[in-house]
Image (cartoon, rainbow, N blue to C red; front, top):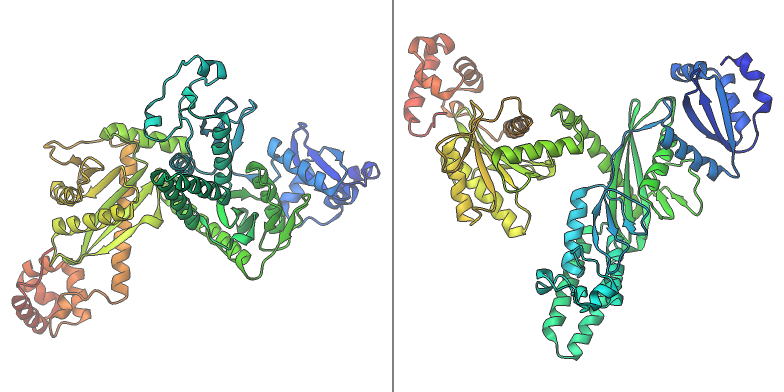
Length: 608
């Protein structure tokens, strides 16, 4: 649409607040925008000089303009976001997030069941969430099971069925995980109290739950039922430990939403922290693709509206790094400069920076193109190939390395859900082994790793990969046996050359199809542990931690040692090299010094 063509309709454009929609020649919606004054806003596209070729291209494609008048700026803001989400016009900001999020559903039925679901249907049930991680939902459900007694069966617990005595209590009742509503051993009112506690727990509001348990302790103590009182005291301790791990700021912070943004060209990353009573109950980082000349303020406002809608936020305060034009009833925008709220904003910014760095790392590992379902398929394939009892959602891999036949170190990398979990990476300086002994080194680091995990009560990996052959695998199994973990974890050895997989005690190796996704994942894990171990070595050397054995020989300096290693590659090959080649490399006088030094240190230098 030209400026002349627009001038013929300009006077018909409303002056009220509302939204405008641009259509192209094929009547396809290509842009949706909001405005406090529709005529002024739309006219600006045709009257001002175009500072971006993208904006000029948008104007050139416009063939029809439609308007919707609303009562307020807030209504315009909400309608714009709704239309963008529904139609995804090509010139609007693109939110790259098409995931379906898990919910915890409280089923609309007698003595409601509580379980995970991805389908939110209008059946009268209560849906809590959504949550950003299935793993987190499962952890929450396990935590709930340990603290609140709810049924897990699928029985139809109607009044008539219970009165007829159709059901009998199951093992869950005898284990203390259920109060037996199927045999009328628990009233509907008492069960409803448990559901109310569950909702408080999921909102991070643990005080009512803890107070309820304290009241029950007093009741049992008054009746001299000290064992029952101790059970509730244990639950309180468990809840307080959970709260201590979750709380990051003063509980007086209240319920707030925290947002931060990081821009990189036409891409923006926005992090969201949902905080309730000082506890972070939700966290999510999204990627947005800018299409026109959107400012950081516009992108952030758009992202806030989308995220608050998806996660059904009811927070009345929003914390952001700078002022934005965000309109929502009964909502306060805060730009903190200091204090607990500033700490929360700093934490959000730390998360969005980490997300960007992790995204780049994942691209290097070629994982960014796989969806969650595709990653699950790879892990399922690996489970079938290795005949594992459990899905290997947590994998750890160990590798030993040394420098020129000396200075042994080890590295461990961790993959969760098919992706690197860098917070769990570890490197080890060998403490108990003298010289180079890959078997003993592997035995030491495996023992140190899983001794620590068992002492801390942390979860163990479903699969442990030892980068090496049968010898290193056997050494690692000695530590597993010493920790009494045999049968609780699965260890395999990965041969360096043919990519053969060994199980402890098996005489034959397993060869996976060379192009299988499961082997590709194992390769990525192996390559990552090599990279991590080599980086550790380089950092140690750059700090002067390593001193080459050759330089320890009096009269052989760094320059001579570098020439030798560059020419012969290792200390072992230097010892085996012909006299003439050594003289040609460093000269007769240096060779004489080197020969004497190697003879003196013959028992101290360990060959590679």
